[in-house]
Length: 200
Image (cartoon, rainbow, N blue to C red):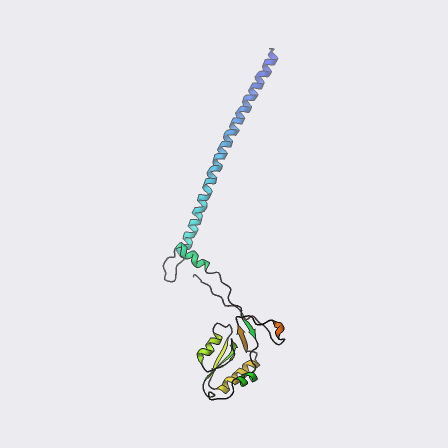
């Protein structure tokens, strides 16, 4: 082997040693990076769990029930879920009887001089001699209208005044018949009744 060939062989061996050394260093670095990735991956759920626990504890510290006692976690989330407002009934209206129809329905009689309860906006508008009967017609009805009058004549007079102002209406939770049944009918949604639980 000539000197020139020996020099080339030595040079190639040294270069190979350098490359192997660099490859070894890169492998160690890769292993180190992999270990750090595993550590971080394992730590993330623990940190998130700790943050969630801290937030829940902070919420529960401020949440009390009506008696001032601390709420348990189950009670707290039960109350929070009840704040969703369920849809209430939809109220429908149709025209109430005219004053002439009311006078025909309640003609003069033996009860003329006793108190009458006038329902102008309710389930069945009309004159009632019992407070409970009148209450049954307006209980739960939005924008209901009821008034006590001393006599039948006064009750009919007040109904006539309210009718002239457009403040008489038959209201029901049940949808009325289809509009095609009568061109004089109109249908208005008065509103809905809702409830919610609020925690101060």
